Image 1 (tube, helix red, strand yellow):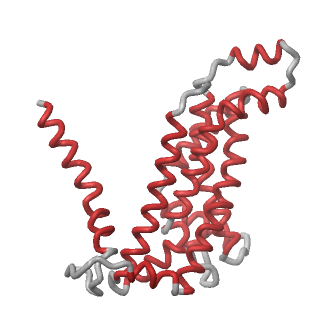
Image 2 (cartoon, helix red, strand yellow):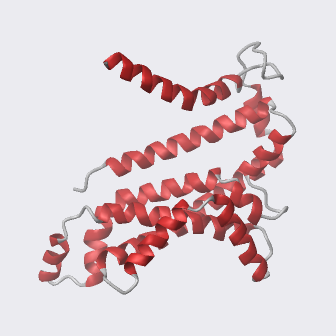
Image 3 (cartoon, one colour):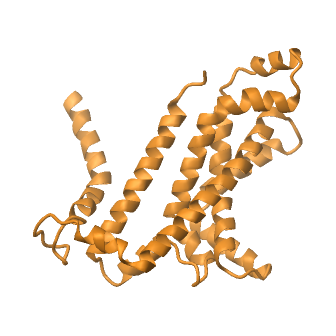
Length: 255
């Protein structure tokens, strides 16, 4: 029975990660044609550093990801604290809308945001991309922080109030420190979502501001080149590191 379970898990993980392993392997292939292995080489990684358009796209992606994650983290944390601390009319409906946003297909959000920007007569580019990424990252931060807050002992805040702490002091010295692992995890998850997004970015960014996922998408449409394998491998490594850090923070127990 144990062997069957092990084989089943190996099959599942093999199905998920074997394509990525092949991608990483062929990113070190010296052959210009990915279907044939010749020798180990780092030439394709070196060529990435000399491509100005790729470097610019990577810098644009990092800038948008950092800003969107930071804004979404600040707003999402405040929203989670408000949902946790206060009872008001429409609170349950608001929580439900968060999950609706999480479950909405990317194409639906992309088209709706595009229609909104056109209605507001906003020029597509950096600001529309930043607003869009902040929008779809915000629910992830709120849900992550809120789930952490709901595991707290509420008597800690009541004890602080009995000792003379005001509302802001209780939030600053008790709620936020205890929620900090979830806040950081929310930031990391938002960073990954923004960095990897293709569908929403395709609709809401202009030709003057190109991001890395769209650059990779345009390169793949012309054929899978070795540089694409190297670029995708770097993007996968960054995403894996960030997600691993987020999971580590989420598993930490409140002190």
